[in-house]
Structures are given as C-alpha cells and as structure tokens.
Image (cartoon, rainbow, N blue to C red; front, side, top):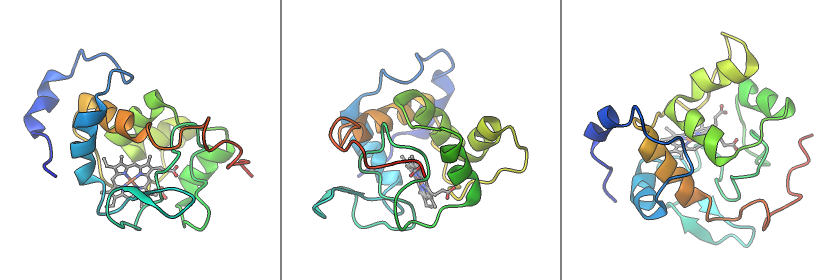
Length: 150
Ligand code: HEC
C-alpha cells in the first residue's frame, strides 16, 4: 500500500470539511495507520490492516465514544474527552487525525492535554478519505450499545 503524495497538503486550504472523503483512496492511505492499528470485528476477523496493536482497534469507530476500546491502555486525555462526551463522527475524526494533541487540547480546553498518538495526517482531504474508509466498518448502527461511556 502506497501513501498518497504529501504534496497534496498545499491544495487543501479550501477543501470541503470531511464527509466528502473517498473510501477507495482512504484504503490505500490507511497504509500509514496499520503499523499501529487494526480493524477487527467481534468475531476476530481482520477487516483492514495487519495486526497493529500499538493503537486501539478501529472497528466501529464512527459513533463510538472516544477512548473506550476495552483492554487498550489509553493516555488520560482521550479517556477524559470520552467521559466528557466526545463521540467520534466523520467531522471530528478529520480534525483529530490532522493533529491529535491539538485536538484534545481544544476539546478539553487544557493546554497540557497529551495524546498517545503522535502520528498526524498531513492533508485534510486525505484524512477525510481515511475516515470514509473506516466508516464502512461497523458503524454505530451495526455495533450499537458497545460503549456505555463509563
Ligand atoms: C505510531 C502509532 C500510530 C499510528 C501510525 C497511528 N496511530 Fe492512531 N493511535 C495510536 C495510539 C497509541 C492511540 C491512543 C491515543 C491515546 O491514548 O491518546 C491512537 C488513537 C487513535 C484514535 C482514537 C481511537 C479511540 O478509540 O478513541 C483514532 C481514531 C486513530 N488513532 C486513528 C488513526 C488513523 C486513522 C491513523 C492513520 C492515519 C493512525 N491512527 C495512525 C497510535 C497510532
């Protein structure tokens, strides 16, 4: 899987925010995530990625409360954001992917908030593509009631 050319970053200033993502492009861009993330359903089937475990499973991501994959050891900030009501949707995921730490600082209104994810997607359009790709796997409708937010 090849990454998209980083050069596209310069062209995205006026791109429509999120929602316009292309899942096919997102599939190849997901190559940059799979060293750390897998998409694996309840039956244990790997739907995307290899077997990256440094980050949480991204199955059912859209509609899920932030920081709630059972058994994954998150940093405090993202757990706190989830407790305060952060639920992932296609728009806030794009913002998170562009800069996880800044995003958590903004959401928590805390300059000292820290993200356990240092990776950043360089371009908004690319982030939207990846989110569109991930949205295909176990949306809230399919995997509902998984997260109680507690
Ligand atoms: C170097 C490893 C690494 C890479 C590369 C990486 N991540 Fe992460 N990701 C993490 C870690 C670790 C966390 C947990 C963050 C925390 O605890 O604050 C995380 C958290 C997340 C979350 C929050 C999930 C939740 O359960 O709330 C999302 C969404 C996410 N990553 C998506 C991506 C996507 C999409 C990519 C590729 C563009 C990516 N990550 C690349 C390590 C990585």
